[in-house]
Image 1 (cartoon, rainbow, N blue to C red):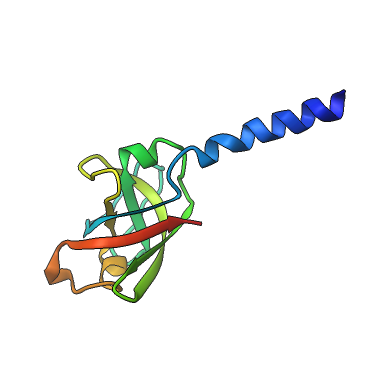
Image 2: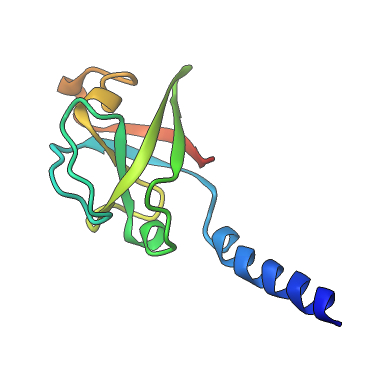
Length: 116
């Protein structure tokens, strides 16, 4: 009996991590980071990302995300919320954005991302 209860508890503890989309498509912009909603202070050179409130509110602080655009990719860490982002949109640090496009572009459409 105890082992079944322990197994069920473990399953229901892990399930909420998968309730949120683990991948998506949207626009990417960039921002100048500072103290983020996860409590980390970051700079323009850190490979980080802020995600939409819908995604952020599922407790993903510190998780890695792979971002792909036109054959280029960058791996970033989720450190902040982006209240102005749509459900699949992301806001990258300047160094991360520049791995996908020139900063002068400002916004790129159709980036694909997945949380790892």
